[in-house]
Image (tube, rainbow, N blue to C red; front, side, top):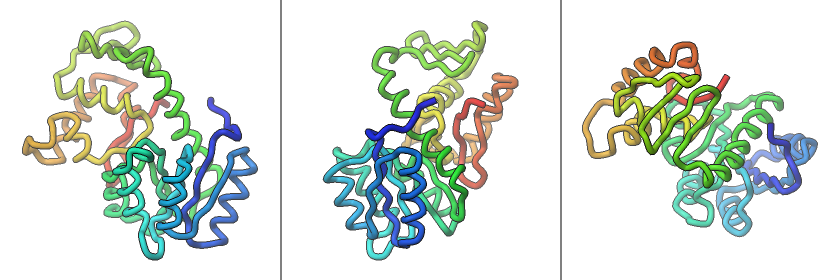
Length: 235
């Protein structure tokens, strides 16, 4: 498990001072280096000037809201790979789906516990280690007993070959490569069949059901995020 160090910097963009102080206190207590901004404009400028390792982004901000901040960060080459966790008091499906579509890595609905927030932060930051390690093993994806050989187009579970359709292979590869991140059905369809092919978003449910069945007990690793989509999470 990754441990926080002073090199892991978190930027909080939140307009409520009380919430900001609580977040800052708990993050620093867990050995993160923290900076804050009270508006979307100030947060965007801070992220561009000195990109942090992770951004906690409130959606309900005065002026430029969190969704617009997220969109601009993803369009900027300096910040497009920045990890973003959205903080939302509304918790509506529409807000979450839009945020994830814009490229947020995760979301958490207020009110939330400190332990839940820290667990989400650690899970997202662990992906930076996985991303850094991909350079030496681009042709192989591993998660527990599941191994995907991208070169051979082959999936094995505990050494046993799994027979998958092309769509199932693409879906599993995409989810494993982005382990822990939540994706909407539309995003997954784009990854599997491409953005120019007309199929309904619910078609992804069929592929997921088939994958879960073929994976057996490990099918539970494809987690349904109610009202949003799916994520791959080793449990």
